[in-house]
Every structure is written in structure tokens, then in C-alpha cells.
Length: 113
Length: 115
Image (cartoon, each protein chain N blue to C red):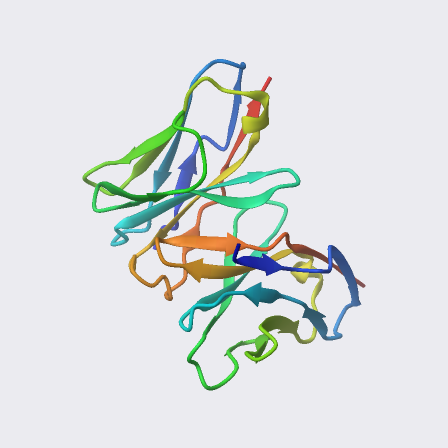
């Protein structure tokens, strides 16, 4: 079955440092899309960044960038200059035809002051 | 612009009862998606509605059902509640149902507790 794997249940990072959250995907489709979402304790899923399988460059959105390595089927999220407000759960997701996102199990990020 | 709104924020029901959860999409969005986030199970796709029709459903029993109204708002109904239905139910909307590349916008969810 096609799936998304996030191998880091929890991560700690010092404030102002960069952190990389890992995500690997498993698909045989040539066309796919990968998303990262942030879920604070309030529960809302906040869209961070998107990478399409045909995109030539790695996606960037402010302090968020995606390290997309197609051959390795990885789409790691890099957060630069971590802030205390970045403490949350982070989910990687793969878009499938039929309107659905397949989510990984998530990584809980804690930013230390 | 108002985001995706869900109501109620919390719901407590007894096993065997029915629960109704509501979702209002962002104005102009025609697609509504429902996801279940149960403890330890991650987010699971439940249902997709577009233009009033159910377009796809996840691997859930028939007692999970819903509908989409002409104004594109949506209801999720869960009949014959079981303890394991306790979860955060998230609704999302999008304006691009075929590719989703615009990114879904999620609401804050309804936390359903079955006792």
C-alpha cells in the first residue's frame, strides 16, 4: 500500500537554530503532490508548503523549505531560525486522486528557549 | 476572509447515539473533505463532497455518512456510536477538487468523545 513515513516521533531544537523533519513516500505514480502541515495544540491543520513531483526546484515558503530528493523518495521539511511558536505536530502528506491526502504519523517538534 | 468553520467544537455522546458534525467551507470553495484523527491512528480520510455529490469515501463503515448542501456546507453523521469513534474530526475545503494543489484549508475540528 502506498504510504507516507515519518520516522521521528519527536524532535527538539534550540530557538533560532534550523531543524529538518524527515518524510519518505512510497508511490509508483509519476504525478503526485506532497504537502506539509503544522498542527498546534488547538487542533487546526495549517498548510505550510507544497511540492509537485514535476517541480524542478525545491519549494520554499518563508522560513520553510522542502528538501525534495525524488530518487530517494524523500521530502524533508527544513525550518530555519526556529521560533517558540513553531512547537507543534508536523505532518507530511501525499495527495492521491480521489481527493484524499495520505498522512504520515507526524513529528512532534519542541523548540527550546 | 473567513476560514473553514466547524461546529460544535466539542461533543460528548453516549455509545449507541448519533452524532452530527457541521462544516462551512471557505466562500467559493465547492469541495469539502472529512478526516478522522483518532489517538494513535493518525489522520484518516473519511469523505469527499463536491457540488453536492459524494465523490469518494475512505475505509469506514456505512454508519459514517454525510451530505453537502446547496451552499456547499456539509454535515457528517455518525450513527450507532462506538467508543472507538472518539476522535478529532477535521473538515477541509478546497477550490480545486481535481488536483488539490492549491492546498486544502482545514478547520479547527470537532472533538467527539463517546462515553
